[in-house]
Image (cartoon, rainbow, N blue to C red; front, side):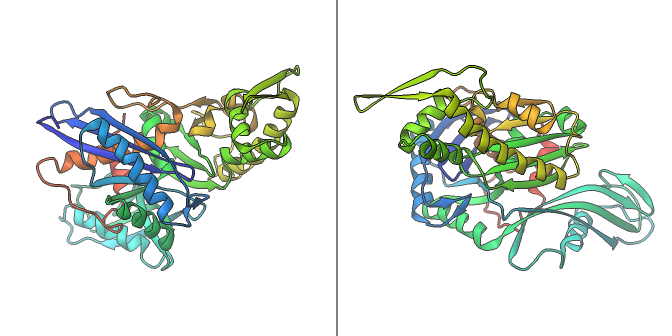
Length: 409
């Protein structure tokens, strides 16, 4: 490793694959430079949830092994992703007395009011991943974004809480530990992807990130610079592959090739033939059959996305539209389909905010891994003079929102 730099690692633990990104952050410039990338197929997960520890652990080990060989750095800690429909998003509020009239609000006061705002409001079987303050009220003065250093006696908070089922979260951490990696911070994949593809201006105006993975699709809504909502639709790119395999009466391997190379999210006006060579045979399919199958599944997927946007109260009301990430977002004309299905501007998001070049790293499928690395970079920079210390999940409350505020592209 170079002198005068700290290291950041992001591991995207997806249902179908694990991606690892290793970067070093130059202390002089603060810019992360990617020095290692790894990718491995994953088994043992369903809809973002671990059902067999061995599969994800092996995939993490394989992906990290590839990234370690490229970077020359042995990874022992990382920021990792969590996914699944068990991730919930809710609003909360709280109030505390902070002291005498001349008392200045400090970080202990902010930590205490976050604790009060969540106490008893999250079920015992759920773990808080993030507490995002939307606004504070100090002695009746509302709409305060950051009361630190202000003077007052009564502090109130309006916040957003993201939580996950504890057993599912613990299993993700155990899978990482089995691969000898300390998952010191765990971040929902949609939030991590947003970190890599959104600009400050988009988050201010109002935007949603739709992270289309293999088995799930995450939705993260931002407005006025803050995260407003997180939801997960249990449908992903694998559902399209399976539908093609059934509808075209072919193997999943061939169906995946058809999806990747010949499918279109927008129905084509004219039918054409598609030929695929497999094991010495030439297989022929019609684009009308492919389009019909793909359209049916995408309609179901985007109905789920629209339902999540309605829950957030932002359906059709996002000036900056939606940004699509994830491997399934690479389906041809996906942005055009999303534009018409959601009635919003849509574009494919490519990761940014880093230096260094690696094969396929600029693809939307790597947005979550790069976002995790960028979040880890902020944590590493804050402790660049000392050895990384593990954080448990309770100590990690509020981490993601603070990272966004202090490390925006």
